[in-house]
Image (cartoon, rainbow, N blue to C red):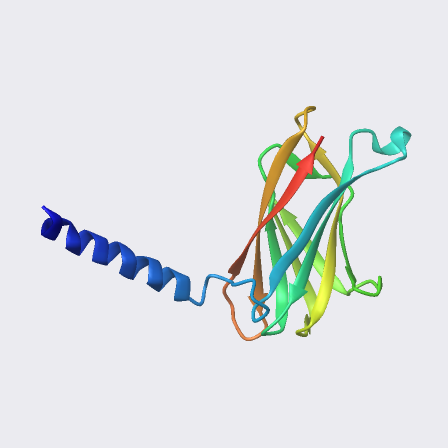
Length: 160
């Protein structure tokens, strides 16, 4: 019986090692771009922004320059006031933003070089649920020398 399970165990171990070494899976070890932080800020002006928040995703660029960032919005989440990007010094980063269905794509006019930190501000985030919840935003990047998206993980936003 033990010998019958050996091929299954070997296959499972080999598959695990293959996926851990796959280049399409980003590692947060300083060699690839990765998410550093995600937070939600409640807007204080209740008259104009009732129920809206600003979600901020912080991205560290490592390894290769990136030309765009894609963020998938969870169901029941919409962005009412747009998206902006600032660098670690608070300066605005020139980028074009497209929003379609549940996907936000930020395309930079010039590739963002390694060792940079970016804050992506999702302004006027509206949820269709009143109670607190954990929202997961899948995030991917596209390197300057590639035309495919590389997943770098999920930004986790907890609302109350």
